[in-house]
Amino acid sequence: MYDIIIVGAGPAGMTAALYAKRANKKVLIFESKTYGGQIVNTPVIENYPGIPDISGFDYATNLYNQIISLGCEIKFEPVIRIEDDLTVITPKNKYVAKSIIIATGAENRKLKLENEEKFIGKGISYCATCDGNFYKNKTVAVNGGGNTALEDAIYLSNIAKKVYLIHRRDEFRGENKYIEDVRNKNNIELILKSTITKIIGDNKLKSIEITSIDNKKQQIEVDGLFIAIGQTPNNEVFKNIIDVSKEGYIISEDGVHTTKKNIYVAGDTRIKDLRQLTTAVSDGAIAATTAIKEMED
Image (cartoon, rainbow, N blue to C red):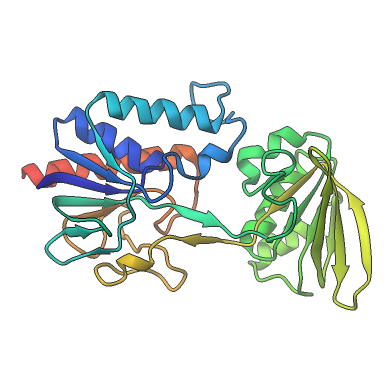
């Protein structure tokens, strides 16, 4: 029997563990891959308050070592189901908790092109607000057609010299306000009815090949490519126990409680407006302190 079982060892999950262990609770974290989540792929974090710059790997490792030093238990096993009595089932065993915090995060959808993985942090990013400042007065491209892509293009237009916005359709799926703002920006160039077909470079991104719907190809030089084609939350195995949106994000009216008593949520895996490191650790702290308070009450 554990006081709190946390599913996911990203910043949200590990922060929840930190707060729970400092409250002298018996805590177990499950992680199916490696600790840190997506942040480990970020070469430099510059927007975390109080830390001018740190690599994502170093940040995650510091947090991991902090919770281990407090006696937190972590098992690198995937959770395959949570039962109604708060039994957590993995391929190896069953574990029972008084409270569960789901902090499984979300994965960025990728173009699945050659060099994409290679150039992450070397010209390719999935977060304009995280990495946009590295491209001051440079040329960048944004790929996508929803609100995120439109907002990213607008945000980057205030930093970069030139922004290409590439979308596979001739109309955007985002809100009219964002579309109008994009069209009013002099340094945003729209490339519609086109897809990115090649990512070109040696040790870092140099250019991209774009193919139109009528198979015309062009190559443009860019310093950065921001891919904004959505995210996939990792919540499929929880659908039997809690409610999720049609996109797969966990539904939480107040940002911490799920639709099942004593199961809480933290981080990018829930419906939220801003998915950043600062909001992830905030979610983890709130989820843990809420679970502890309600457990003691």
